[in-house]
Length: 130
Image (cartoon, rainbow, N blue to C red):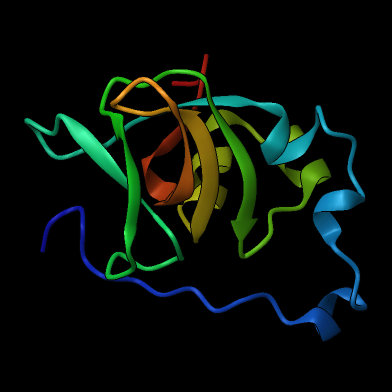
């Protein structure tokens, strides 16, 4: 088993959120979407990391980011991460929250253009965090 074993995360149940989009409840500069990220805990020698069309390693690759990418922005995570809990958490707890699912990120792709896709959240580390 390596860092790329398949995982599929189901869509959040709208009934559990009252049918509302939780991501819209928090200000844009708070919670998981308020930070910028770098990649961490990659296999030694990893040069590029694939972004996927869906939350599964087996889904179509829509682009790649460099293993040393900085400034990635999270658009959403599944399962959703509560903004207030994320903001109040210490760096280690934030990483644990991210590691529970997949996050849709956007950033500079390997070819230089903007790329958006899903990545396993355990590879994301808020910039400035240890």
